[in-house]
Image 1 (cartoon, one colour):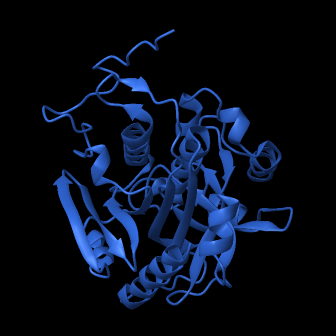
Image 2 (cartoon, rainbow, N blue to C red):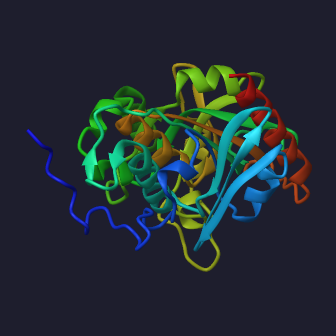
Length: 294
């Protein structure tokens, strides 16, 4: 029985046949993909490539594909937030696992490696600012995005999620949290030597991360509650805005995902590293070296 084609409105394509937001064709993307939030960081990664094969930009999404020590790698900017991750991961999956001509799912599944390199703020006083990297073993989603997809309960860590809800007295009016584990393989190979922890993914930078400017917060103790949370020897090490969607969607779609973040601020000690760029460059080089060795 022939699969029913995916309608145009469900999978929009550009006039040249490329996927709508990424503006990419399947042959232009490697199956090992480094994701960065900042569009300016794409060239900082591809500058290490021995050969730059392809580059394209559309809105905040910039893509470079090339070779590093014989390994074909794509680096792509996502912009900030889980909403952008929703677009990027779904369209990357479509490039490999949907026939864009027939609009039907391919019989053979391609498993992608998705590695996010970012910056983050620490939630533990002993996580130093500057030359320290957190490898996200678990992503704690405070955004609610994964619940829009069937099967989300099959990829979440329910006991840790419930323990977090109970510990914090989570406000029922906020999105229901969820916890998703990293790719064990990527964590072992790319996360070696880094701090392992739980990364909280928030749907915003200010209120959702406990910041208050002119607007008051309903729970001023949210961050201290998160700082004191522990489950099975795991604790919440840092805040950012993308990993929960990356981990959840990757699990659902059969891909591997890992986030590595340079710590540029500490919310407990109030320290900040304005000149963090050498540390990010070091993380980029280490990640490329480890990917080339896989």
